[in-house]
Image (cartoon, rainbow over all chains, first blue to last red; front, side, top):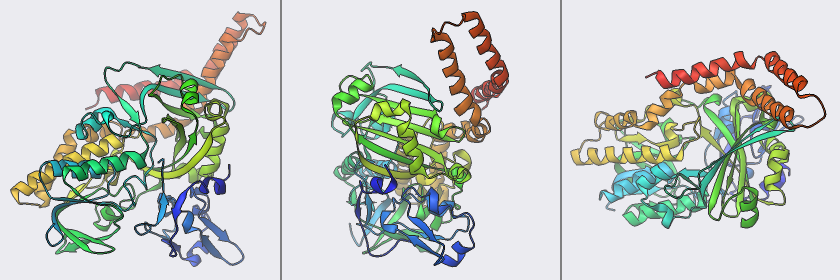
Amino acid sequence: MNINEKLSLLKYNKGNESHLSVDDDVCMRCNEKYCTYICPADVYEWNDKKCTMTIRYENCLECGACKIACEKNNISWCYPNAGFGVKFKNG
Amino acid sequence: MENNKVEVIVIGAGPAGVSSAITLAKAGKEVLLVERGDNAGDKNMFGGCIYAKQTADIFPRFWENAPVERNITTQKIIMMTDSKSLEIDYNDPSKASYKAFTVTRAKWDNWAAMQAKEAGAYYAPKTFVKELIIENGKVVGIRTELEDFYADIVIIADGVNSVFAKQLGLRKEIKDEDVTLNVKEVIKLSKDIIENRFNLDENEGCGCKFIGGPIKDMLALGFMFTNKDTVTIGFGIGLDELKKHNLKPYELLEEIKEHSAIAKYIKGGESIEYSAHLIPEGGFNSMPKIYDNRVMLVGDAAMMVNNIHMEGTNLAMLSGKLAAETAIFALEKGDFSASTLSLYYKKIKESIIYKDLKTHANTIPFMKKHIKTITSLYPELACEFFDMFTNADGIAKRSKYRKFVSTLLKSGVIIKSLPFALFALEKCIKK
């Protein structure tokens, strides 16, 4: 079962505004980009050509791992507003 | 509630927050419990069981009407190598006293929050706290998306990522080694299949921990719990380990599910949910300052998790209760200063929270140092012993014994085990 199949099991109320953001210039200088593999929902993807970080915030499980793991302290992180985000039924 | 002012505000309706709110409401105090989820438990995930004793201190005889899944009567440990495994079961089917129950958080937390409401707390789910309101350097209330609320005391129970402990500077930035990332999957199976596979009677449950195999040589622990008609399977791993080994947590979870020791339990089941959560496992040395003027920190927000014995919800409930008792004392005294609220710290210090976390203050660094012995060497030698002893393969026994003893000696297991004996001894005698 791949990550997309896992995420498809979840119930989300997706907002229009991202609760996560990064400064692409800082990401460009980051060799590790830990966020691109430690995130349990595969939210972060670096685009080498465009030099931008794609953030699929709508898949976020709200765990907070990315913010702590980021070597550059470059992830602006908060919880989604009330009524939005993931909703676990069997947590 | 007059002018949006109460005596105590509790932020977060998890086990710690609800325990605070219910204790305060029962004492006749005016308390507002706010929760960002649509319902309490919507945003939560955990390994899988609550402990009966400390839970009953807050919710007497809860098993009679709370949404519990199964009464844990079997504790299973599985040691895995790459392809083999050794399983140990501890069974205590006596109904004389309950020890632990499996629950799912959406049902349990919501039920618990309702108990606080029934006890008289104002309960406001779907309420997002934007920030604490601070006047003259002191916390006086909370700012939500819609309106402001004021209180004499604010109890911060906003979980592992505690935004508000950070806003107050009570907590520093969390380090990689202070948290484990836990991912889990919930797998639907019939009641009968679960009871057959885990060897359980009706309503009996199993809690399982596993090491080695796909998660060998790193500080990671797998878990499996039986609910009524689902099995939860997952693992926790230090963020530092994930970074060091370049691992994707969900791929590791798949490897675990495919290992022969695990696959047989979940075969034919349907995955119905995937989730992730951080657990504050930094232990004693990562505990922040837990009180200040008009404010106290409880549960995961205060990093109160016993990472060796996998206790968290029980410590959360206990800390919530102790903070509430302190708040009651302060309200009656009419003094909400840090010096009055230091009573909370004193209570924590006398409780198992402080004592147990202190006992294990150096255990994780110790285990990290010996992680290969624990997660590779022991499972391999144990499996090798059983293979040697039980395999009627036509080879003379004496030569097999010799070969096994020589493997033992070459592995250095005796010398490698000495530190464990000394470490255990230190835990018993040190004050």
